Length: 228
Image (cartoon, rainbow, N blue to C red; front, top):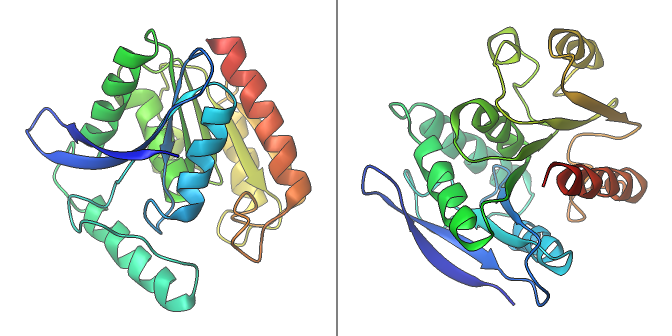
């Protein structure tokens, strides 16, 4: 069972985070970046699954700068609230939430021999992609169906660590055409596409696809081990 901790960013802001520790010797750390639904039961479960695999896992609350204690479900009302909160965070002056992600990486690195990866889902996937360029100390980054990654503005980023991405070809939010364009513009990034919809990794959503989720996790774990 994990615990709640506080992370201090370079600007002094205190961000809450969920920390899950492995019961075996730590093989590295994974920063788990939330969807637009907060550090809810699903994200905590994801963190716990990485802890079971031997990683120190930490999930920072990336809404904290605009609203504390956000934990949403997956109804249409939850979706609207999450979208609104995301817009508020995206509008923050730079570095904004990137400072909190840096604090999470720094904390993880100090407790996991400096080996830190970031894995993010939905909006967290976009933040993970940005972090691959902007956050220091990452050994690997793995965005899952990150909305916005394949846009022209984001696809020109220059990641400073190895990156693997996961997309679904049934995702109405991220066209397969834009994924292929991203793949061409970022030939060093490992792009995986599944016969699945947006949010296929979340077992609390109707779009959950166990086959795609299991395959993506297997690839992710192998990628992390390779780059640690």
